[in-house]
Image: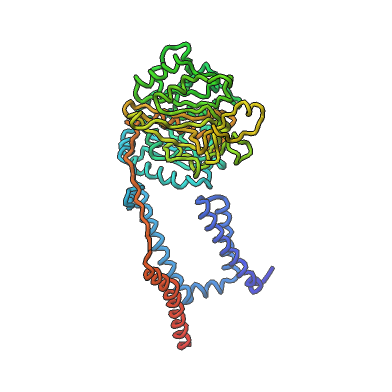
Length: 528
């Protein structure tokens, strides 16, 4: 057995172990914010180290407790404990009585009056679950927005942020397939949002309070993409996304029915391989003309993909209807661009291909992919088509052109821009709104971008989903008060002001610090 004098040698080691253990416990707790077994183990190790240090050298402990340093340390400890206690009380009061102020000039962080009214009209409690990975750039802004909803809901709105990689069971339970998905649920009602914006969340809350059928019909009978097909050309993945947003997705064959069903919020024509007949086009026209808050989404493929003979002009009644009634022309070409590997495969990037559209503005700076598309042209003007508002939303690069030599392409000839081809940039997607009739039109020069094999490429699925959301939006319900951001810039053009700022920041302030340091050093040297 070792003597007390021999044990004193181990006191500094035990003290070091104790301090390290306490510091480790504090660091781990700050990281995870939970009293995990690691925190408990580190805390126990730290306390044990301190206790052993006192046992190994009780004299040093007694001297420290009764000395002047202990008195000073005790006073400092009391002040620290008092400050921590005061902060704890203030934090508890703030938690129980949350109050926030929006000090921005344009009230950026204040919910719209329509949102506050929707929260007050909720018939039940709503829970939001945000599936965002820790490195998702939208996680912070989404959390801040949901905090505003919770603060204004008087306990009717709660939320939690979930990392999909850490909670795979919860991801499977809610059948979430995309990072950055927000799920809202109230009782048995559930809706999945791809964009966590105030308009989208408020729209879902309004639908919770006023549940209505949102039926979307997909035209059939012309070789369109099959809704139930899980293979590459099918639309089963997009149907699944629409179903999660409480859409009823149904087929529509106008060859066997006389009219579009009355509950249709929109009709989608998804890539017909043979032209839609004139009789069917008339039925679609009647649907839009005699019903308000209706929409038509047309996704046309190139003549190269359709079952036609190129030696005779192609008759497309639907294309004629779009040109004559809506002022949108779908050219009989295929957009080619030799910038990439395949001239007919177009990667549309954010900076060059997206216009200022409510659809593309929510694509989160992600590119889209089009494998074979025909170009569009907006021929309508306010004079020729009064009441129509046009918004081209996707265009090709300037190096692209509209290739019309289909025979050469079928013979595997390399595409090249000829005299009769339309030069780029070319429109690939356009939206039109009839403000008087409250009807909307979305036209794409491609349908394959929404198919199963390419819908997961870039923002393709988001592009299609957001197009349907825009087409079926009930503006009378979801019309938030717009917030006009205030732009403030500081522009210094006066050379005298610039030189003065440089002189103060670069010379005066550092020199002042050096002078004060020298004065302090000199005064201390005099008292040595």
